[in-house]
Image 1 (tube, rainbow, N blue to C red):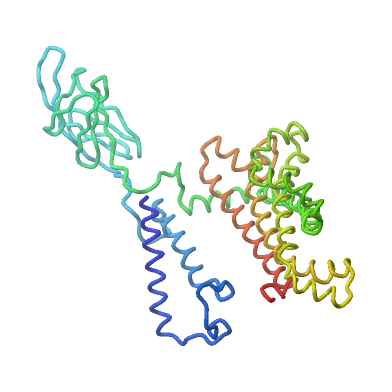
Image 2 (cartoon, rainbow, N blue to C red; image 1 turned 180 degrees about the vertical axis):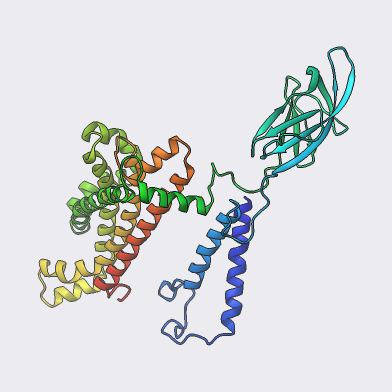
Length: 404
């Protein structure tokens, strides 16, 4: 919750600052600035590159601030590390009352000769630690505050609670920083990346892992496009095809690819064919719907114009329907590629020898969060790179997108 609040504040603050700065700069004089209506006009909206850069910086700063990274200049309050103490009163088995002081070293080692105290304990960072009281006595107050089983007392730099058996337990203040096992710092992830890039992981180099995942995704996507695009065209042009395949497509479209893993394993086995088939099914329905929507979205006036000029059905398909449906197909291809990248981790869940998803799954079994996060970042970066390439291809191959 704290991260979301800080992120929202930085988002609003950055937008306000950039608006103030741009008011003092020279206004734009391009096609968009000459439009009389911009609110609600999708063609008038262009990505603000300054916002993109600031967004990445804010995400990195938040990551570093909440993990205690040395790469950022500020941090949220972290866990208490150091020496603290609290007083207690215990009642022995004979009913005798005696007091004492507990000296606590939170997240640090106990010195060879600690200062004089009745109890000395070392508490691991982010953990609770039972406090052994002298003579097996049972405490009834901490820092002068009465305590009983199940109750907690706030002390300097932490909390003291009593277990149902009457034993005291100390927990140091955790602050707002994340423990490395939950979220490692940026430099920890970078260090792990360099280590795996040099030495590999699970008997394969990092590039072999990434290459295996990329080839599976491309193979599944290519097969999905090869089958889905003609099927979508057929459904958009023929009532019989539409009626025959529409129930199948609409039934399978909302089924997540992960739900198909058991059937894919039974039908195609646990090796490469099963993984490619799962990715093929992930892309198939998206590409089918995109092609069908592309055909359905062709301006009917263009069809009438082509027929009035004597065009045949083949000429209509080649010169009118195909060019005008390509923007929808490219949009569907970008969505399908994203779905395939999101499915590759699950596809490599079973009997994969290499792959980015296999790295993530193997590392998670040993709580190697830095490798898990590294794998997620690499999958995201590669997926984003593919999406950028597809946008470039769309601009080159479909320059008429958005034109009537």
